[in-house]
Amino acid sequence: MRALRSMGPIFLVLAVLLALIAVANPFFLEPAGFLAFLKRAAPLVILAAGQYFVIVSGEFDLSVGSLVTVQVVVAARLIDGSEPATWPVLALLVALGLLVGLVNGVITTGLRVPSFITTLGMMLVLSGAVFLWTGGAPRGALSETFRMFGRKDLGPVPWSVLVLLVAGAAAILLMRSDFGKRLIATGDNERAAGLSGVRVGRTRVLAFVVSGLAAAVAGILLGGFAGVSAQVGQGLEFQAITAVVLGGVALGGGRGSVVAAMAGAFTLEALFTLLNLHGVSGALEYAVQGVIIAAVAMGTVRLPFRRAARV
Image (cartoon, rainbow, N blue to C red; front, side, top):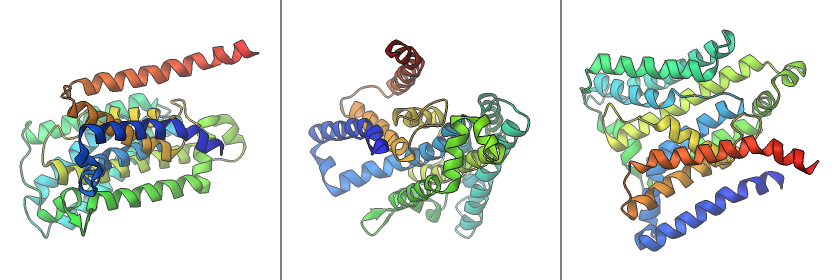
C-alpha cells in the first residue's frame, strides 16, 4: 500500500496529460492513435527503466545517449542494407551495450571514480569515436528486418510495444528478486548493506550492465523508428534521468519504484506531445527537463529541514 501511495501522483499527472492530449486531438482516443503514442514512448521508457537501476543504487549513467547513437551508426555501417547481416549485428549491438555497462561499472566501483565522471568520460569517448568514424555523416543503411522492430507491427500491435512489454516485465521481476533488494539496500546505505553481506561493488556493476543493455534495446528501436542519424541519441541521457526523478525515485538512491520510473517516462513523452500539439517549440524540451530536475533536487534538499521543523 505504501508503494502504491508513493506512485499515485505520477499516475495522476499522466492521466491528466493524456486527457488533455485527447481533448486537443480526439484521434488519440482511437486504438491506432494510442498505440502510436506507445510506439514513440517505448525507447525512452526502456531507457528510463535501465537508468532506474543505476540511480536507485546511488549512481548515474550519462553515457546512454551516446551509446544509442553508436548503436544506430554502427548498425547502419555494418549492415549496409544486407538482410543476412542483420541478426549477427543485432547480437553485436547487445554485446556492445553490455560491454559499455560493464566498463562503466568496473571503473566506478573498482577504481572508485564517481559515476558522474566515469559515464561523462564514456559519453565523450563514444561521441568522439562516432564523429571520427563517420566524419559527422553516417554511412550505410539499415535493413528492413532491423527497422521492423521500431517501425512495423505484429498484427495490430507494434513490435516496439511488444518489446516494451517484455522489457517492463523483466525490470519488474528483477526488482522483486534478491538482486532488486540488494540494489535498494546498496543505494539506501552502502555501509550497512556491505555489513549485512551484500556485495556492493558487484551489485552496482550489474546495475550499469542492465543500463547498457537497456540502451542497446532502445537504440535498436530508435534506429528502426527514426532512421540513421549521428544525433539520434542526443539528450536521451537527460530525458531518462528526468523521467526517473519525475517518477519519484530519489536521486541519492535507495528509494523509488521501477514502475513509477517508467510512468515518469510516459509522462515526459505525454508532456512533449501536448506541447507539440499546441505548437510550442521543441527547443523548450530541454528547459522543461531542467525545471523538473531542479524542482526535484530542491525538494530533496529541503526535506531534512522540514523534518527538523517537525521535531
